[in-house]
Image 1 (cartoon, one colour):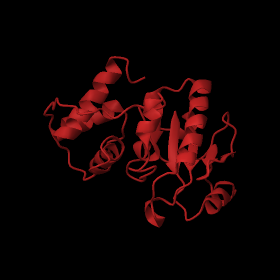
Image 2: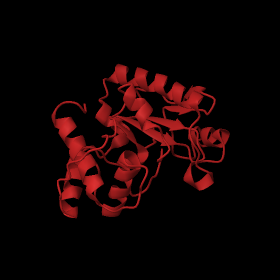
Image 3: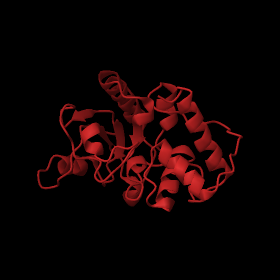
Length: 211
């Protein structure tokens, strides 16, 4: 899988220093600077320590099955802001190459918050998933889904687990889902729109449209 992060530090230089420090215990395969410069820190054939305690579609050791990209952005703690066009253009080129090399399905291109909903918010609601989706580099958000399956909250969470999320923290899982798939309203409430979006995502996957 391919996991997108933001660095969540005041500057890119601070983030790179931390990611290359033996004492920090964290690393990533790549860093994408705001000016579009890409740094490779760890060879793709080696494990990088970017995901932490995480889960996706039955995989509990995400670090062993993923490539991690850190995208320079101060994040929610230090002044979250939109990602510059040059940065996203570089990320798109890099992601396209990675997906081809490793035959990674679009359904396994995820945010850190998708695989660690109880701990993480990145890359956040400003991340332009739609740009990646238009180039077949990530799943697209369902547009105007109208069929509300009227699941109970428990049934929604089971469907969310079926899609790939860890639902141990129910509120965190719901918020993570909204952050990725309905970023205009992140309130942790399971409503008809959330149910309709999730149903469409599952239907698309079963039809082979969400590989």
